[in-house]
Length: 124
Image (cartoon, rainbow, N blue to C red; front, side, top):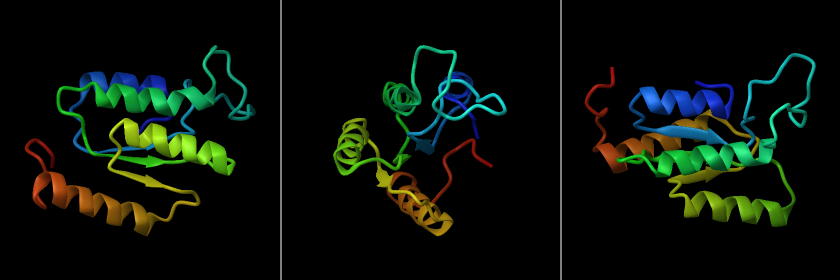
């Protein structure tokens, strides 16, 4: 689990990823206490962080199945996010509010489709 896109970049650089859950609302930097998700020192906005993580995962030698969690947006922005996620190779896109059961079901389907119901080598 990471709290920012910068942490995600470091994690992906150092750890094999077999399945990713990417929240498009992921901030670029960890949020400081008392700041809203829209306030950052970085020039990148929250809106840019999630898609950048998707791009990074898509460039891996073996891109993992990716479950994308959309932000709550207008219908037009929602369609744009869905298109972006699918173009990036997302396995599934989930609308908020997210239910744990939904995530677990999608993960089960990804495990079946990509790994024949078995954890990939090296996963405990």
